[in-house]
Length: 187
Length: 154
Image: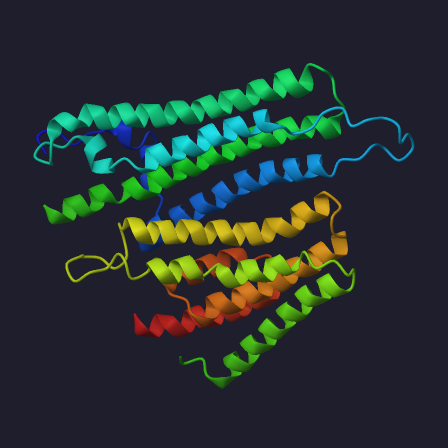
């Protein structure tokens, strides 16, 4: 309230980095659609990785040379980036979005930096998961030069983390977008 | 509901076809894993139904918006729906079930899900239906008819 409502409002960094997205006219279903989309993206990510895991569990040697062993399997190391991303999603969504905005006169204003710190921890976990999956793809699957059907495990892992991050972003935008609209109404 | 008796008959027909497809996809190849698809689509509307009463009390200005539990219900519902669609694909990819069984259980699951959604749906769910039923183009016409019927009450 005390700050001017403008395009360069510094608080917006923590809210929605893409203000033009709020102008998309979806009417009153905007929030519901965003949440549905986030859930769908989340499920896509989880299943992309589970697909690779089930494929690995059912992997068999090629039919023309049955003695050729399956060179690589999905192990626990492949699960770690996804778990990091999942923890990041949990941390991000447990934060009260009004705290992060830091409006004066709302609750404890000194708690704002703590909320932003946890927001940073959440995004760091998600970015760590994404970077970890990319590192896993390169170190475990690409550099040893496995055939394409085994490199798929690594790419599925990257896809999982990308989808989880997209899900968190969509959920965040969907839940924080309509707030200012109601706020204007209440004034 | 203004739609009347014809829609009830049509919906029960769709539901019957859906279950027929799912059970056929299991029985023809004597591999009963695709039956999980039916379970998934039956469970899908449950979170929405459970959480839908959590948000709106007498003091909230707008209906059903801005509530955490409702969002959680929608999130879980979307998760289960996409799970239902991806489960046959994943099973077929790893050659546990045949591709034919995968396609049949997909169509059947879609029919069952559409039945559940149309039967007890509010506005935004119907929006979701019309988005998803592009895949099942034959049923799109009927959801459009439903949406027209409901716009009379708004």
